[in-house]
Structures are given as C-alpha cells and as structure tokens.
Length: 499
Image (cartoon, rainbow, N blue to C red; front, side):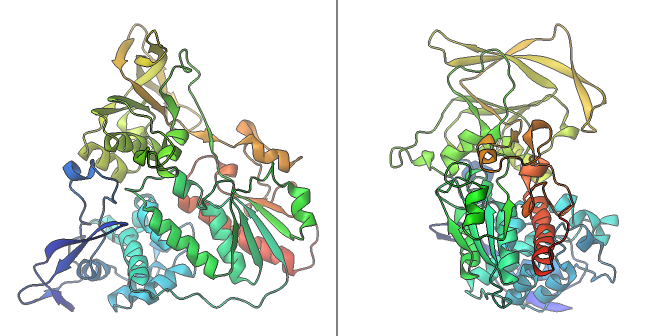
C-alpha cells in the first residue's frame, strides 16, 4: 500500500512546446489499493484541440503514475516483456516508478530503447506489450506505454538525463544512412559499444518520419529533438542535407574509412491509386501534405515560405495512422469537414484504436466500404468531386484481410476540394543509385538475407521500412537492435563468410 494525495484539481502549465496537465493535492491522504482501476490519461478537449497543434494527451501526473504502476503484478514470467520488440525490462522499470525512482526508471528503459519519450507516445502498445499483460485476462492491462512516457518525461523535465557509460573506443567507424527510428536506434547501440557513428540525413533536420510524418499534436518536435540530442551527447555525429545516392555512394563511404554501413532510409515514395483525374490540382500524397506542415511549417505561411494546401471539404483516402494524421491536421488547418474514405470495414482499419477514437472525437467522418474510381475537376482543373463505388468483402487476400469487391452499379459522388492519398509508400529509388547491385524484391524493398538485416553486399545491413514496407516505429527499432548486435559480432570477430 502506498499513500498519495487525493482529489486532484486539474490545471495546466503552458510553455512554447505546449501545455501539460498537472494536479495539485487537497484534503487527506488516500490509501491506494494495488488493483485500482486503470488510470485515464487526461486529454485536451476535442472542441479546443482542433484549433491548435498542441499535444492531445497530457500524460500521467506523479500521483496517477504511482497508482497505475501499482497495478503491475510484477510477474515472474513477464509476458509483456516478450511482446516488446526491443525487449524492455517492463517489470523492472515499473517497479522503479513504484519506488518513485523516476530517473532510474527511464535509465532502465534506455538500456534497451534510446527513444522512450517517442515510443511512449506513438508505439502501439495495445497490440504488443499491453496485449500480453496478464491483467488483460480479466481487466484493462497496465498502461505500460503511458508509464514509459511518464518516466522519460520526468527524467527530461527534472534534468536528470544521464549518458550511459560507453565501451572504450575501438577505432571502427559505422555509417548510418537515414535518421529515422531504425537509424537512430542502431546509432545509439553502436555508440555504446565503442564505435564512431555518423548518421547521414537527406533532409535539413534529423529524425526521418518522426519529424516529417507525425504531427505535432501526436509527437511534439521538441521531444524528438531532445531524444536526438541525447544521441549527440553519446558521441553520434549527424550530417544533414546529405543525400546518399547523390552526394555520396557506397564506394565513397568505404573510401572514407567506414567499416560497416546500415541502410535505414525508410519508405518515403508515395503510392497513388492510378485512377483518372489524379493530376488535378489539390490532390496530394500524404507524404507531401504532412511534410509541408510538419517539417516546413506551412501552417505558419507566410512567416515560413512553404504554402499549405487547404480545402473546405477534405477527403483522405486510406485508414491507417497516416490517414488519421492527415484528416486531423486538415481540421486544424481550418477545413469545415474531413472525411476518411476506406474500401474495407472498420474491423480492417490499420490505424491504432486510439487514433481512430481521437479522430471520431474530432468529428472526422468515415465513409467505409467505399473506393474511389475517378477524380472530377472543374474548368480550371481543380478537383471538385470523387466518383466512388461501394464495396463488399470477399475471401481473404494475401494480406489476410477480406478482399474488397466492387458492387456493380453502386457508383456515387462525394464533393471535395482537397484530396489526400494515404494508401502507403514505397522505397525512394534515389538511394539505390548509391548502392548499385543491392538485391531488391517486389516493389523495390531491400532483401534482408538474415533476421539481422544483412544484405547481399558484404558489410551492408538494412532495416526498417526499406526492408519491411511501412510498419511501426518500434518494429523498425527492434530490427535495428538485432542489426547492431550482429554488426558488433561481425566486426569484433574475424570476419568469415558473409552469407
């Protein structure tokens, strides 16, 4: 049993990076039972938040974090840990929160994950660690993700960040191409193992999809910057505006003295529907739309030079997390209405339940079992309508989901003046001009010859979306950790046969 103050009165502390919910205590102390109900994370009200880009969930307070941590049963066989792609010692870090050792809890997480404040916000815990929590058999699981975020935020806000002890420098150099989740993770792991690591980023800011793809209201850029600065303090060098394939190629990297290369450029080439009218004005890929707003700050035009695509009736094609990000961003940009168009049912929507819930709270419309077949424009070639067809579900396809089948004669029109296509992305071919001969499979993804990401090119590993296609932040990080262990083993032992 622990004691905390009761009857929390909410108030907000606002800084340039946004507002954070806090609580003050009143009245007598309350004895908290270990099996309290799962604590809800307070959030901005939907009516208010669609008018700003500030983060939606405020995170746990000290009091609610202690209550939630004490729900953990500290299982002898922690199935939650087995569900974590990077193998965080979940019972241990939650146990440290119980003891109010918040900085130590963050440091425990960082033994396996250098980006806890990011993962605590965007990792799909409900499908991984929390799904395997033993409490989930009878009641809501422990809020592992929210506790991870709490520990990381407390460490940062109390200026308790400690750089872990690194192995002695071993003289070997690692080049990491791409500074998204996979690249950052491998860089951190290899720096701790004593390597000199340089990250090459094509854009003017490091972070990859974390900075250009995920909106501020879901992942504040100040959080990403703080996590990247942590890597810099570990000795990782970052070269921005460095497009591998144009500025350097693989031979250049070998000439520069690198002993191994990790290719982690993600999947940033937009996929379109290839239907009539796709070249009309105000039809954008999700990649371009979000990059303009997240990275180039188009929401502040003309203070910033990039104009923002706008529309009163926005249609977003797709139903993954990226589609939800686009629709919710459009509302914040002043759209009167934003509609998700998806060809399957709600059960097949790839987006996290939390993201769908937030979208519905913000009054995003959903047109399910619907597929676009043609864009219709006006005399000036601006999009004005989408012709759609209703769908029915058939037998499962290669993805394991029911195959959507058009219903003959069911065509109808949806009015729109801005369309955002969020149906996936593929690998950008530019990088491969710098990696001539690397083996690729269908759609251009790199072939991973081993679970650790070895390619057919000796000394070159690959991981993240460039191998798997669009996936989660944490899955990319899990691949990078396997690659780091294999890379270290390969470089410290006498290199034998590559494959």
